[in-house]
Length: 245
Length: 245
Image 1: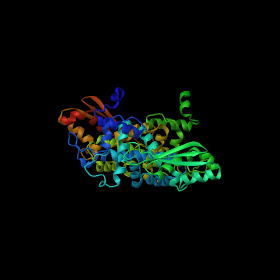
Image 2: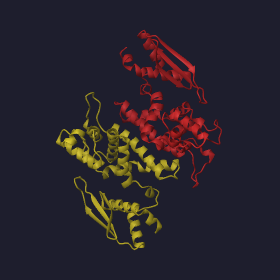
Image 3: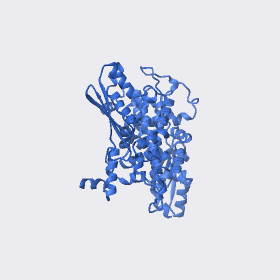
Image 4: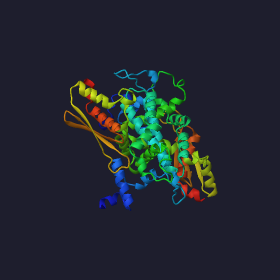
C-alpha cells in the first residue's frame, strides 16, 4: 500500500477502487487520477474549478479523438503497405466511425464510471464513444503518447480492428477456423461460459481447443463476440498453416 | 565521417548532401534517409518498388496529416485551458488550413528537395503543404512520435502558430514591441540583413536590440516575416513586463 500511495496517493476508498478498476482496464498503472475522473464527468453535473471553468470530458474528447486518429493512421500505414492515400483515409473513417467507437466504449463498459445528472438511458448512444475518446485523452495526458499507443493497440486494434475483415476478405473467423479444422482433420472445441467478474454488464468467455490443446481465449459482452475474438487469435497463431491449407 | 557512416550510411555524395541539408532543417540527425527521399518524391516520377508498388509521398502525407493533427490538438489543449471543444476544433482548423500548411512548406523551402517530372511552376500551390505533411510522416517513421512532436513545436508552433494572434488579441508583434519600448522609455533597434545561406530562396535575418542588448533574432523569406518572428520572441522573453506596462 505504501508503494501505491507514493504513485497515485488515492485519498479515499472510492479513489482506491477507481485506481484498481482503471488498472484492470488499462493494463498499466494510472498516475494522475484527476485526468480519468474528468474523462468520466458529464457536463450535466455542472462541475466547475476554482476559476469557474467547467470540468467535464468534452475537451478530453477533442484531444483523444486526435490521438486515436494518429495511432490508427500509423497502424493502417504499416499494415496496409499497398493501400493508397484514398484507401487509407477510407479505412480510417470506418475504424473511427461513430458506430464503431460507441461499440468499443460499450464493450469496455465505460459507462459504469460516468458521473452524470442525467439517467444513463437518457444520455443517448454517443456517450459510449465520447467517453472512450476522452479516456484516450486522459491516458495521453497522464502517461504520454507511447502508453496511449499501446493502450489503443491492445484494447482496440487487436481485439476489434481488422483490415482483413474490413476489406471483406474474412467475414467470420469462427467459420474460417472450423472450415480449416475440418479440411485438415483437426479436432476442435469451442467452450463458452459466463465470466462477468466485477463488471456490471454480463460478459462471456470462450475457449478454443484444437487437438486437445488450449489455443486461445476471448472475452466479450456476447458469446458470439467472444467466439470471434478467440477465433481471430487462433487465426493469427496459425496464419501460415491456414494460408497453406 | 566514420561516425556518420555508422548512423546513416550515405552511399553517395548526393546522399551526404541530403543528410546535411535535412539535419539543418530538422535540427536532429535523420537516420533512415529513404523515408525522407520518399517524402520528396512526386507521383509524376512514376517510381515503383520491386513489387510494382508506387513510391511517392502521398501515403506519407496521410500519415503526417494525422500526426500533425494530434500534436496541434495537444498544444491547443494545453495552451488554451478555457477553450471548449468547439473552440479547440475551430482553432485547429485554422492552424492546419491548406493556406497555412502551404505557407509553412514554402517558408521552409521544401520544394528544393522535390523530385518530379512536372515543372515546379505547374504543380500548384498545394504541393508545399503536402510535402510538409509528408515530411512529418517521414520524421515519425524515422524517429518516432517524440521527435515529431519536437520538430512540429520548434519549426511550426513557435515560429508560426500563435493563439494570441489567432484569437485576434495581438495583430503585430513588431507594433506591440515598439509601443512597449516607447511607453517604458527603452531604446530599441531592428536590424535586418540578407541571410540566404545555402538555400535557393532568398532569406532575411532580423536582430532586435533593446537598450544596447541583443534580445532576439528571426529568420524568414521576407524582412517583414523575420521581424515578426524576432518580435514574437521578444514578446515571450518579456511577457510579464509587457503585461504590467
